[in-house]
Length: 450
Image 1 (cartoon, helix red, strand yellow):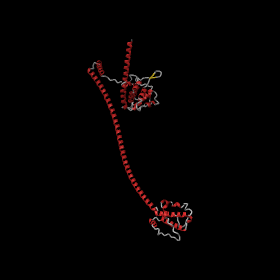
Image 2: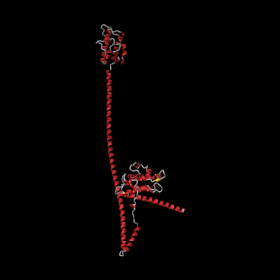
Image 3: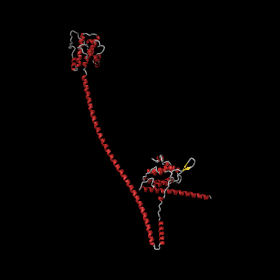
Image 4: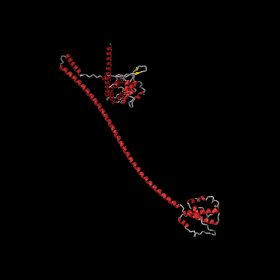
């Protein structure tokens, strides 16, 4: 009994393994057929949610992604069913510029199955379905956490599946993400009828010919073997011609599709080339304009620099000429040292007479004579006149006496007021304390302060 139980267990295990292998092989084969039918249909019409080929492909892809998917264990130890969206969300989070967050934020898509169906449509429109599947296959730890042993996503066939899905990148899909196809309550059902095509083998054809001969000989005594053989050969020839016609038609469609694709590619490249040529011409024109403007600005700046240098030279010459003229003017306007000596002698004499209190008539006469000499020295700046006054000898100088004594010589007192500072202080002495009291006494029309 024990050996019988072990044998039954082994038989069941082998049967389960065989059924799992057959299921994987069937799903992958049907997926390849559905991709081919989508490519053929896209050559004649636009693929949308209502296309039966697309509906069947989505159902097959959902079955593949949900093959041997583990359930979700709750707190109470029960296992609830899980959608493939949970695995895709965890395994494809590292894909650059992924659409997982945008799908999670959709308001009209709430269930996990509906989010998975929305993800399939979005990545098909983005032409990145194969990229997402390849990224999920590289995350082996994550896929093992969501799938059981023997699943398609854990087998070697998954790499072939990603390669097969690359062909869908040539199709421009357009879907509405608010339609009925996103309803998570409807299960995915695969329609196998478009892929079930019967092809008669050569043995079957020979058996049919033999059967036709038998029927022909038994049904009619007038029929001859030649007629039967002729009918069989005609039937065989017709079937061969029909199969050849189908093959030629398929090759013609493939060549036509390739021709259209190449023509479209050539048109695209020609448009890109013309755009690049026009852009290059525009850049060359802008470069020439920039070079011309740079040359003109350089010439203008050189002309401005030369003009400024000329103006600076003229200003320097004018400044030098002005300095020379100012120096000559100041030199001519400044009084001579002889006139300064005469003014100093007159002032010393005035101060000396005031301090001594000798305000006599002869002092007034000599002071009047001195003031006359001061006025003459201020009005006349010629050196010849000054020299003539200085060159007079003491013996030949005769002051008019008119009965008055001659004023003693004050030549020894001239040294104190011969400097320029002493000459500049003459104006301050007019209002000094020593000249304040006799001003009213000596003020006469003949004596004018200088």
